[in-house]
Length: 264
Image (cartoon, rainbow, N blue to C red):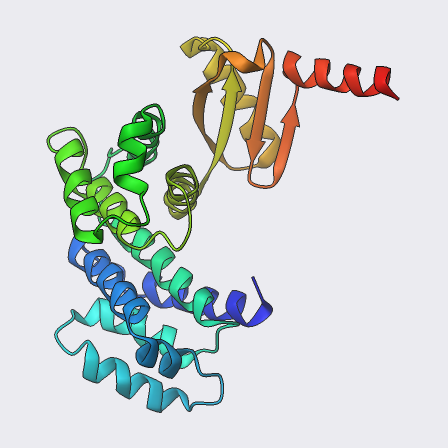
């Protein structure tokens, strides 16, 4: 992520925060829709990502194309247009993140979006057929979104359905696992938490998970949301990933290191 994108995203997030009390599910839906519209139009994408264009001119484009959007969604898109992004891909990624944040912000109190999104990812990646149906590059975007809605109907919140159905429509080259990871990271961050992926050979008990979460919260100074991944291939021990930090204490990793030492 370039410095221009970091600054533009920070300002757009501030614009979203400024809409407190006005952000609802429609806000998230419209931001996702704007991302798809911009992604599907080379002309629109070039106009909004042009660093040489005047902010007012780009905001005029937003006003014309997205005139029917709510004031909250328009305010966020105005910020997106007013600032310079390192690339058009970064602009699309920024709108996607803002859509996730707005949708998460609209969730009723007590809604565990992180768990719902992660559960969907686990279900899809455990079935090659289902992963192909949801993640195929040849699949019709609206058909993939409808499949997500059918899979989650009555099992997840409207916010989880909106986030996941939107992501599969515009994956931008990412697999389902990467989409889910990105979504859970953003949703957690929106609530002031961070996600820790914990990979184990056998499921940890609730008491073990609680102790691990408390320990990590103390180390990172933020609430930790644990996504537990059961993978017999690790053999034993734990592989932990928090953002770019990876701690691999699995038996599989230790055996691999031993083989490298012996080979050397």
